[in-house]
Image (spheres, helix red, strand yellow):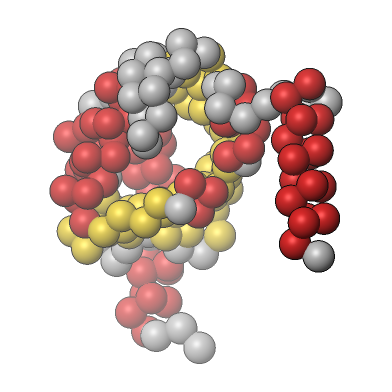
Length: 172
């Protein structure tokens, strides 16, 4: 059963207000305005991208993530955005797009453009700001577009499959 504080928060905040902070956040991402992005997070915030094994705590770590991402992908943007509200959470679906022009997450720049789908779950804190952002994406799709993984049914993929089959055979 939810506490009276969380029930009061849900009742006192309109769906539009819950949605507004997330829209402000996404617009700041598109402008690559890191200060404005961080202003949408509550003080005790966190950020997670399970597909990349990324877990960040606090605004300093989140700042570093955005600065590194925007430096590596200077044309980063969200497109085809859709929002849904469920209780005190906002769900956001979009495509992220950009061109990988700088080192990102240890990967040398590929110069390739990408466009991949994301789904985010964003809990809203009692102060009306974002408690967290959890970004779900298909990392294999992203890395394939960037040339870090071989394309489906490519010669490189067939080679990797052969090596894998041989490795499994040798284990037996």
